[in-house]
Image (tube, rainbow, N blue to C red; front, top):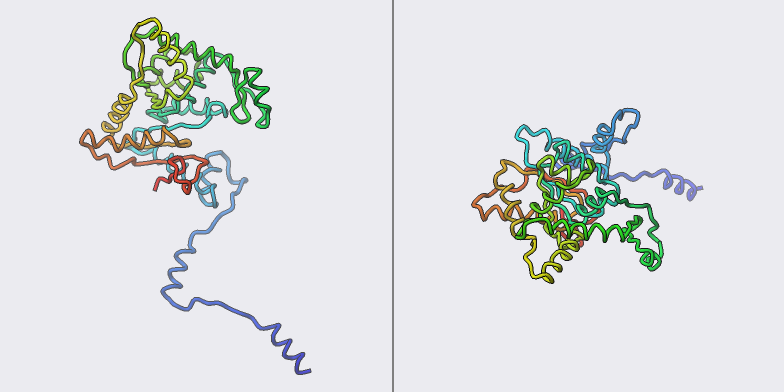
Length: 313
């Protein structure tokens, strides 16, 4: 009987932890003051309201909400900053061409720094060619035999790529020989495009400069290499891309702006280039203090040490 009573008492015993230090209790209440709020689809009447509600969620949703808040502040600042858009990755192939074009058309960005590949694929589509749904597990040897290029789960026609490469080289033939920044060359190239949905054509129309600092590392660079090769063979001067002139031109933009803001989609050269424009401003005797606003959308992470995943802290 006594052992049964002991067992009964043991089973009903409760354990409790309690913070007794008044200062720590006050500090704890401060830390646990902002609650996570589940998204309510019945209350979200628009995409804007939905994204705004993400700010009260957790994990990456909260970060998306924070990015939207930064973008809103950027766009509504009475002293509107010069907005620099950095783009890397297969954005056109992924179907974001019209979105980027609309950002330019609606005055959301004042300058673009892009990989050459994004601008090339925009030009490729402006010439009437397409990207196609593909299979990420496709037989690449077979695709090569068919002159089909694969961008993960997206296909492009290599014959049309090569045709576009050569067209770019032939276009370079029509320009006076000499040194051009990528911005100056792309402005000329974009002026020939008739596609209203083209990023480059819209940028030229709206007076938004487009820089591709590593333009040689793209199919535009292949086209310009074809132009250069013919110039060498024929013993005539040709067109050359001056990347240091790109440095100078972009930094002038930053130096002459009261404020700057950066939108980074992915990372790579464009992100680093926009960052370097702030550093290069010291050459002109100006300390800009950095970008007033910045947001980035990337799949990379900081712990690998690469620039694409580096934080904005």
